[in-house]
Image 1: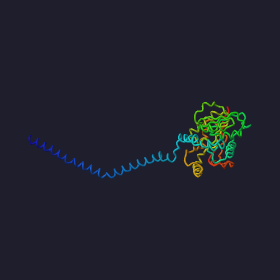
Image 2: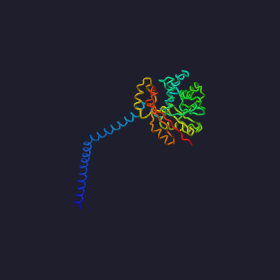
Image 3: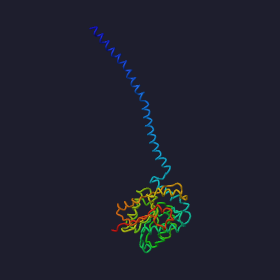
Image 4: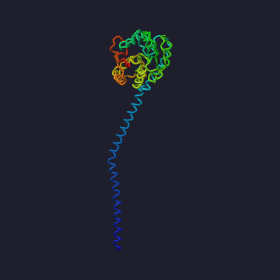
Length: 319
């Protein structure tokens, strides 16, 4: 028995000794395996770091550099910066009396006669119908600025019964009130806001000239159109003149950069596809009486922007 117990003790000691001897072998094997694959792991980590760095650079370019290249591309920023220009940076021109009001509105390259001819030609070609000098008609002018277009329209049609002109830049509205002697009423208001204080179905004509590309985005344009539609009487004409055509944006922006009289920096314009207006008309039950490319009107090709603008006339269905 004693011999057996001694034999068992020696056997356990041998097994434990064997375990202690083989364990370092396993640890050595793991170490060698990691050593053999260390370069592969390093390469994988390098690739992961490179991908992360590339993504970060892409995000930084989009957020930072794109913003630096065009800091006014955001919808709200664009509209706010344009308001700042019309409200503040035009003050020098506002001090120049009542001659050439269209220069205050940004039409510096045109004479007063050219501006009047341009606006009235667009209104005629797009199909605007006004009889008896506008006698008995009520008009809502959206985005009147300093009143240059308002004066041109009221000079052409002097018999309007009522004329309400809105603009969001208070200094321009004040200038219009100072210079207008036709009896038009001017108010400071953003045409994209809720204009609930204007009674619905009040106006025979709702008109806007060279305004929509100063708005923030298509949603803002839709709100302006909704305000026009709400204010218009059944059967009324709704006219938007001088809209920047999205399909011509690339060529137009290249052309605008070559016009050295333009400022080098500033907010971008909003370019709108014609399909936007067709879809809007369909959704609201409006009839588009006419949509005209201004590039096809030979008489106004002295106007630098005619090559990439269009005008449109809606008709609100009669009850």
